[in-house]
Length: 145
Image 1: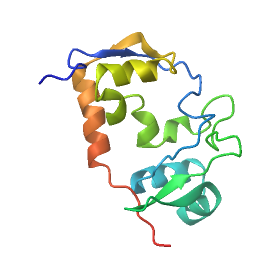
Image 2: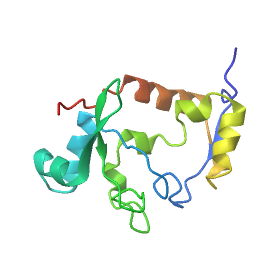
Image 3: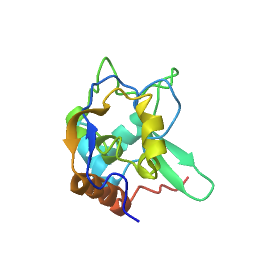
């Protein structure tokens, strides 16, 4: 069965912060993400991890995630992403996440919250497939407690 997004989907980020704010969640990091972020912040990876990350026990896996503010905003949100050029792959590939692309209904449901979806630039099916493949191949950090 052909994916509903094979012919592409429109998306242009409006920098509204929907995907970065107001709801608790996780931004899981790969080693590449951690390296990029710590270099951007001019910090050692150890210091960056101590100040800006938390260990999350998901039951089936333990992962490293960015911390959030008490308001459930990403720590790096301040009227925009303060680490945009170094943002993690999870952020780079939004909204082209498996959960949003599993059906047209799931895509449209997410689009009710994200004003950039179904608007602006047409992203090709090839570009969307590439985002999915990058997420699939990503090896997330699994710290020990």
